[in-house]
Image (cartoon, rainbow, N blue to C red; front, top):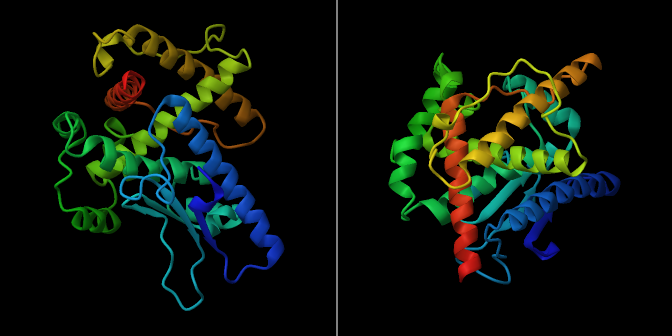
Amino acid sequence: MCLADSIARFRTFPTPTNRRYWRAIENAKRRLVAQLLAVGLPVQSKVEEDPDRGVMFDFLRSPPEGPRVMTSHGNGLITLNVEEADDAIREKIRHELHEPYRTLLGHFRHEIGHYYWDRLIAGTAWHEKFRALFGDEREDYAAALRRNYESGPPADWRDQHISSYASVHPWEDWAECFAHYLHLVDSLDTALGFGLSGDDIEAEVEPFKPEDLYDPEDADAKRVLSLVNSWMELVSALNELARSMGQQDFYPFVMSRPVLRKLHFIQLMVKGERETAEAG
């Protein structure tokens, strides 16, 4: 994906700040695109390759008089409020929203999840399976958002969702799980690339079992289960290392069995898309 696919409008930034923010944003965006290509998902430019189904990025700053730019996705266009590239501002927002995790890369992975729902789930053979697992996306989205902001998430959201925001609506549950799938795959690949594994770590982690997967009979189920269990042991050690340095947890999430089913569903969808592309 070429630089032309990113439209940056830093109208009010001094030049040094402009360059620093754009560099951070581009680094996160390029890591996202590189991973998408590596796992075999379709990545076409909306500018040069596929105007109807491609993807592009718009990096905007809210004007002083408003309105505020919202990080979002719509019809293949991912918009990012560039203030998220300011560590202090992003941390302030994370604290105000009571979020355990908020990063530029996380924003990109969440919004690209919405894009792939439109492209690979809606109207496909996966659609009804999605509804059975995540819920019916035909629920009024605006009403769901309003209910969340007025009343907060349900008390038991941790039992079914990877984050409180995932409990808002099936679309957000999908996007949060899709982002988490990319987090897990990229982090695990990096760890294995450096020879790190949870196999030699003694951690009190209850392992997931085959019946916890979406499809225990899938040919790759045993391998997926082994990788996830190894990952959970590894992040337990990494969390303890972070705490020993007085830092917040490296992995500030709790992965429930329902969440693992959703992640495995996404893995199967990604594998199917990759196999279709390779066959065609």
